[in-house]
Length: 123
Image 1 (cartoon, rainbow, N blue to C red):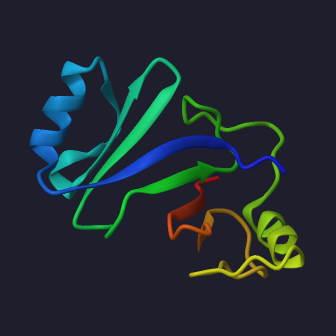
Image 2: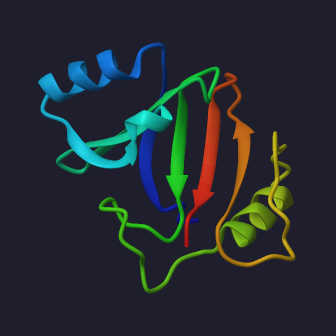
């Protein structure tokens, strides 16, 4: 099962302070809009997302259809197929995507320890 590009989505209290901190660690802007309270930062192949007021907890995020540079892949497993495979394995979902659609979509689930996992396809 190929889940796509990986990042950690951090639920931050002060996005400007968090951005300044992570930039001291060598991260640089990679996407997002700090004025909308979300920012994507990158250091080498490591990607983190800073989200103020959008999530209650930090989350693992996977982006089917993207590489680590957020560039579209020629071939990938669609989020709807991933959802079908996980359902067949008995995985429970917090939110699901409509399997009758195409293009961008997402679903969310929790791991056994309650950590959120977001699978968010942008292509």
